[in-house]
Image (cartoon, rainbow, N blue to C red; front, side, top):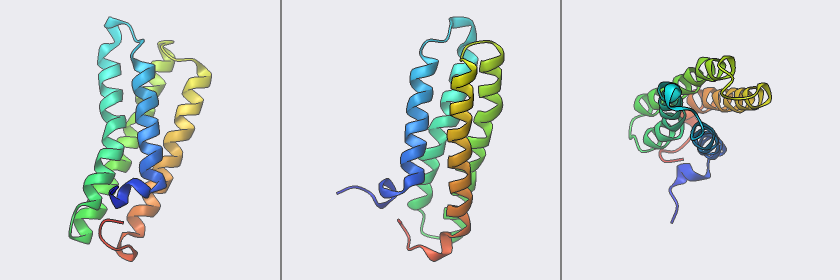
Length: 122
């Protein structure tokens, strides 16, 4: 039986984003491993914090984890810009990934704002 958070669109989009970042950063040169590592960590933090927030009993805790996930999504933006400036990703890849992360961040804002309306684990 899947966890309830696995049904959330924002969770699935977060996992998709983290997966794409992982594939993309696999090709980074050794001298850019710091960017790859930081971008991977920030991207993985998004769905991980959504999942952890959904496991929390108290509304304040759940909301805090959703905002942490949102902060991690925001963290990805300058990292992606640095990757584009160093020509590690194309302009098209940069724009597509930023659109994805903007969508996820917007959804996380709504998730946090509406957390009190949802039952725990939803």
